[in-house]
Image (cartoon, rainbow, N blue to C red; front, side):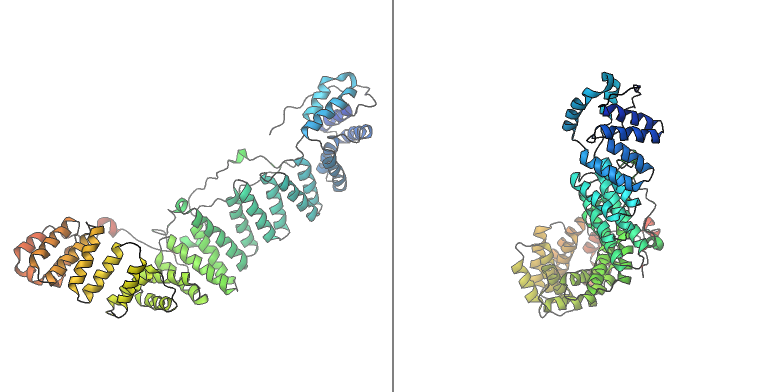
Length: 517
């Protein structure tokens, strides 16, 4: 809060012997004029008259603080903390001591009352003196004490974490920053700046790169929608090598609205904006992987990198990190499941199958991956065991799902049990009646069962539901006879037109991803 304009009062030539207040105001006026020697003398006269004066030690200590007289600052500001009065008590003191003001000068009294200050100034002036005097522990104790008094005041946290950083006590600094994030605005930005400074100060510390990466990772996970546009699509490969992109970051706190630290009037910086946490997480965690020695932490760092690449819609970049994490921490079934999913998305079905078998053997496989294993076995014509997997899935699943019906239909179809396959696909359509691909499957099944009329009826329904795979119709061997002379079939298929192999937009589309190896 800005102070009101300073009052200009005339000091009487002769001051009453018991009038400490007028001597105090005289000291204020002399200090404002820059005559600190005479101001100090006036303050000392005030103390001589009234050693319990609640303001004089602060203002005298402030003169000494500006002159870097640390030993005297220590004495006088400690005394200021002892003699400080709460507002109600200060009012009573004014009424009592005001009776001795020379000639009851109203200007003197008003200037005295306006000089009441926030007690926090004593804490910060004295702590700053201790810092500059290299009495670091005493400074830290004062900042800690003020945090307990006012947990919402960011200045105390700021001074304390910067002090701990100067002392190389990064763990303590991080703890203070975490508390600051809990109680004050701008905590994430300050933590971001802290990890940037710390990893630069300790460039080969796997621990601090890991901590920084975990921080960025938490930002991503807890605020995913806020950063959902941060993808690697259409970005040059070197994008990963830059921690920040060209997005202009706007701080949520306006600089002009951040008051300086009380007492010392120091400015606080706003920290560092977080605009690309996924990329920053990857960079930090790659460094952590390079310098860490604890295999559990290395495994966790690699799993997090894989998770972030998945969030960046770059699944082909994810699986090597899940692979390393799984190799280092094979007991973690969650990592193995992520590795299976990553392999599956990258068409590495043989590798995925190997880990699915491991999960099954260890009885750690979940329902989703049980169905995936059943799908792999079906496509590999390994029908032994598929029945048990599907039966267990049906027993576990509390309600019918299209995915289960589709998989059962596929299993029966590939094992040439066409009637059972038709039944399962029909069940699927009760849940998703407009799925053209399943309707096309029923057209094929009808044809295989010799039901020509039903086959064409299902083909019409598939096309009406959006089935438009022109080349499937032209190349599917099941329609070889119809393509040679069935005019009715040909007329139906005329409704599906050939599309160009490449859309004009797709011709220019490049989907490049950053290289991190």
